[in-house]
Length: 117
Image (cartoon, rainbow, N blue to C red; front, side):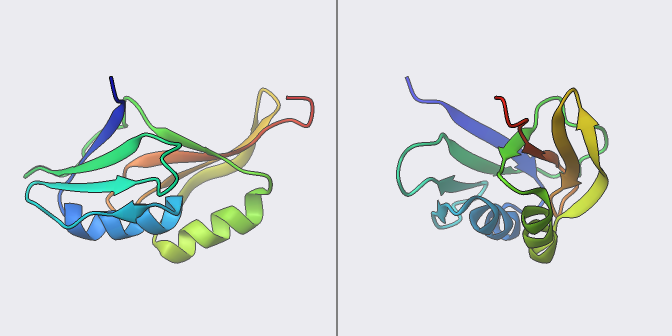
């Protein structure tokens, strides 16, 4: 078995550039309706971007959490790539969290774990 995360999007080819840079992954060529974004070390699941005709209209039922050591530099890096901050940073039961969206409005979180975790 192999785990693959699939993200619906309107422009898979363009959004693959964002997620490739955000995650430090490599991307495959766009073969409509799919673009694969993969961890070059093979440590993390593949992110498969699936082009669909409809835009996102409601909150994601599932999202990615990016666990980092320092909030501000990572949020600055991601916003420079095209992400938008929705809210935060805020304390979420000891986890410092910022909610962002990718360029198509898909939510994801940047999280700094408490020192004791």
